[in-house]
Amino acid sequence: MTADTTDTTEPMQATQATIVRFDRTERALHWVNAVLVLGLLATGLALYAGPISTVIGRRPLVKAVHVWSGLLLPVPVIVALAGRWGAALRADLATMNRWTADDRRWWRRSARRGARLGKFNPGQKLNTAFVGGSLAVLLGTGIVMRWFEPFPDTWRTGATFAHDWFAFGLGLAVAAHVVLALADPVSLRAMRRGTVPVGWARRNRPRWHEETTGMPSGDARDDG
Amino acid sequence: MAADRDDGDAGAPFGRRVFLALLGLGAAGVVWGAKAQDLMERALGPITAKDGSGLSSLLPVGRFRIYTVTGGFPTRSTDEYRLRIDGLVDRPLDLSYDDLLSIEPSHLTRDFQCVTGWRVRDVMWTGVRLSDLLDMAGVKSAATALHFTSFDGLYTESLTLDQARRDDMLVAYQMEGEPVSRDHGGPVRLYVAPMYGYKSLKWLDGIEVTSEVRTGYWEQAGYDTDAWIGDSNGRDDEPVG
View (tube, each protein chain N blue to C red):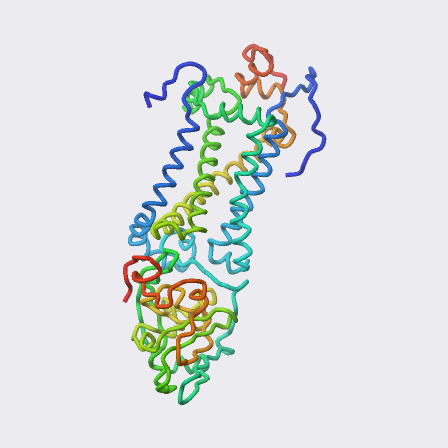
């Protein structure tokens, strides 16, 4: 999670050519979200799991941190999406929203080799929608839990119920995301420094490579 | 899925559908989650409440949630433990843990219902009936209520004398056949079966017999003093008792 200051514009060199995968806005949003979400999961666990609650104690403080981090969560997203600086983010969200014929092919293991993916694979698309939807539900149910007075009391119970289960799901999704990212140095670098090698894009994301470089991906030589 | 066959490169708006489906699921959870939880608790509660490993207690079903109003969890060993009973009584008492154990025990198996909505079914409590302790101390005629204090130094509770004389009011030292743990309010806590959980003060160390009701910690924050389950705090849970 260290900020990398070596990020400069990348010249397209023949030897170690790279292309931009995530711009500054996207990376900043990613890491701000990562801190908030990990903080929410940690404080949530401390509030939820009896044995951990009793080790950590300080319930009012943990609760305040949890509630305020949760309320803060939409702010970076809105700021990142709203301005001129959000163009790449908006474009990526539009791409992630769409489920193409190649994505369907990729999902079938037998046909995966023939799938020519765009910028994101279907697992990444699914993860984005799932994490986004879960966070929205967790925020909404969290608000009902915290400010329960105007609602019927079954809603308070129901919100707690939904909050618990969605938090479980989100925790699993985040754990899987972190494990997969740590196992993939290129993706990790893409989110730390913003770029990926051209060769990686050509092999793994051929449609995106074509759109970005204007060069055909199919007959390009693998430069490893 | 035929409707998803959006030909051309763009493809179907799959991400938005997943996002909206999750929002729908969340909303359904808020509205019907209490019912779903109730069904699951009936099915799984007997297993999770009694599982000694503590692992199943992490499932959001039929489990106690551990609350404290102070920064931490007060600890008092059974050796150090004292229970004072004073105020409007003929014989003020100062009981040790062993003194409590030497009094004829009562057993009570009842649901534990929290005002925030969770319920643990069929919890077995063992302890001394509050009315037995009152008889030992001898209540004066001017008395109408009890004021309870916790050795967390902050939490307080109250009962009227009539409520306290019911036979489902325990000064409990065992839960599910084990000594009440520190997290559950041990070594000794109050168990007020027919009322919401906040009446069942944890870490009990003092009972003062008073001439009028002095409201407790949560009651000063707006919760009902007569906290009958299903008939207070605007809730309609199934009564206990």
